[in-house]
Image 1: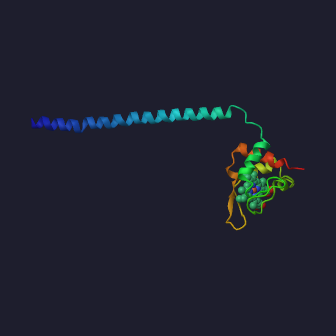
Image 2: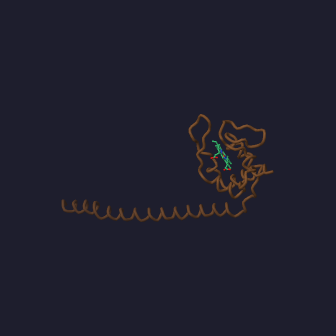
Image 3: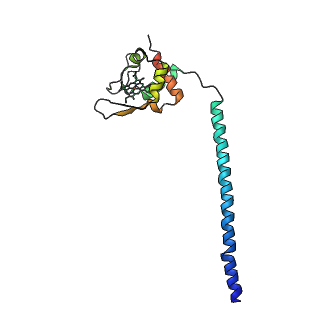
Length: 148
Ligand code: HEC
């Protein structure tokens, strides 16, 4: 009686527990792998659907909206407009007419992080580095509109 009890406790305590330990670990691993595979498939699918249609050509019209939202704080984004703060930032017209400021230069410049000074403020990051590639090309098309 006592021996059977011990045997049952031992049986319940060691073997089955040991087995469930193994059993629960395996399916979990399979589930993780399955989820990773499904996730990967979804990511690949969405990446594919994003790269499938050719990107729209750069648009100066959309670029103007980007400039209004993200650049006019410091830049005079069109002749006659005013920046919100006094920053030592060239106007977009000046940039477009500075030798060497072609689309390739501007693309390189706008992908880099730039700390700039505005009057009375500590240096801040010019937000060009956070632009999406599309928004960047749009705003570049907009800037180059002012090339004489
Ligand atoms: C916080 C103020 C600020 C904001 C916002 C800002 N800029 Fe600037 N930007 C500057 C300053 C200041 C300079 C001059 C920096 C220098 O010469 O080192 C400058 C220079 C530039 C230049 C000139 C590069 C050259 O050497 O010809 C370009 C291009 C430019 N900015 C693009 C942009 C675009 C596009 C946006 C909006 C997405 C933007 N900036 C937003 C402050 C700003």
